[in-house]
Length: 531
Image 1 (tube, helix red, strand yellow):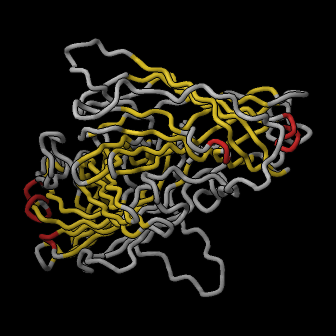
Image 2: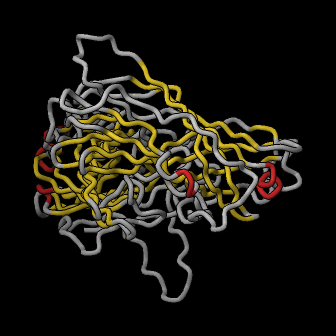
Image 3: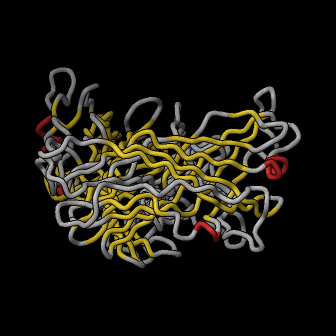
């Protein structure tokens, strides 16, 4: 979650018509008393939240705030307990929970920020100011929209004077609004549309928090601090747990041969990580994820299915956006991804064996090459206590034939044998997503406080769809044209595909979770194909 979580800060329209007054900005500057759970015990702190956002917007208009900062002032009594004796500087990342409410609809998002390292003071308080891009929010209804500051998590990474990490290398601090902050945590009350009451968006009045060097009689609510949390694609997403279906679904036919699934684990013994191709993110960002994917694809004409090998997928998760619709609150996240194999955007080569035309054994080495951006669009409908998720993966993939054997005799297909265009699937939104591409759909249910069921981007799970294999071109060597032979044997519509994605690895966090990532920041979970 650190640096890659859901973040939202909202400002919407006053009652004035759009054409009557030029759009201005409203600045929020709120200093709030918080209580932070530190190794030495609970300590009071001051949290200052500032932002600039439009003073109004029309219903359905995208709102994107600017100059958003979260400043945490920790008292001098807390500084000694936060760092080791060798610590000379500390770098901070913050996650502020922001409640968003309109009428009876409510959601809670996380507003993230990062900061450059600051020197640890010899005496006095430690001031940590973080900032970050804030995603937009769209509402399709009129009415007052209320934003409220909630729990705050502060991740600290101390370093020695020479820049080396200290031991322990990181520390997470959980903070919550102090008891005397009740009634003061509202950041803004925003009228949306002509039917809403009130005037321009308002910020809370300035306040002077109580002294930060005295602790309350009872500790603040504690958040998990044992490890960083992976960036979820939605609130309630499974944390560090592979979200596979609890009941098996229908899969491709079992005919055909390919890479065999890993052998069953011996009860009572630790399961080693199965072999998998390298999956390294060269220049990770705070939004970088990686995952392995594998599965089966039918070839209907050959009455069989072939395994798609374990393949590395590198994902750049987008910033989520909130949309208020008639059926509820939607959390929209748009990400991009690419296959990665030996520096190329493709799967590893894989072998397929079928009975061509029902009687001739044919074996080929194939590869799926990515010819354009792969998009991952997640839509989560927030319905308490359950959240329903739909994720569409769209990928332009060309099927390339590297070599082939017919009844044991090599068949020279040449160096450029491939489908004449990318594989195609039925597209539910062809105007928005034109062109030829594979479409896979993952559906999930995120039950608050429990593991996700089905597919969730960060937890993984099954993705299914159907694909048309186009005709082949440039197949053959020495003047022999094999295009029509391969097209007649393989090409055609309605080929069912079922892919299984494993748990993602949060590559961009400072200390990747050990149940997600290997020591060298590769995905720990290697999924098995399911029919």
